Image 1 (spheres, one colour):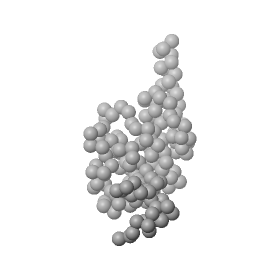
Image 2 (image 1 turned 60 degrees about the horizontal axis):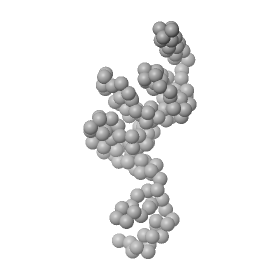
Image 3 (image 1 turned 45 degrees about the horizontal axis):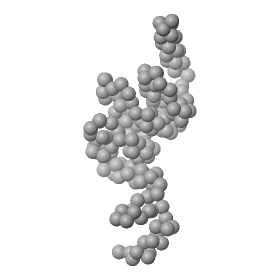
Image 4 (image 1 turned 90 degrees about the vertical axis):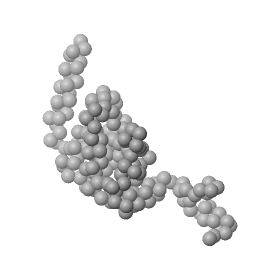
Length: 169
């Protein structure tokens, strides 16, 4: 439909890249945005498992978190099912760091106090249970989810750590 000379000009002056038989975007953000538009158009929750979840491990494939972020930006009602998704299995021990990064990138100014508390407890509690350091970018953004009502929650975790240390002595 276009001759190769005109296509070459398009590739040189746009975000598209020519890889022989395929064309892709140089910046994945555009692809993630377009994928989110398509997920929302198709009826997001109906197609969650088909597109987003790895069928072998039953986890959200890490490459989809960018698209899911755009979905949540456009429809905040999608956040609750995504928080619940990780809680579907009681025997689940470890959650994906990318999942926590996704949760803490949600626009905190659009959340209710209850949603902020829920995300804070989910992310902070998971790192406490695993007894591992939280990555700086996650910790920095997680601070934005803190509500004063979480003071007792944090004190309880401190007491748990103190009890562990006393037992070690």
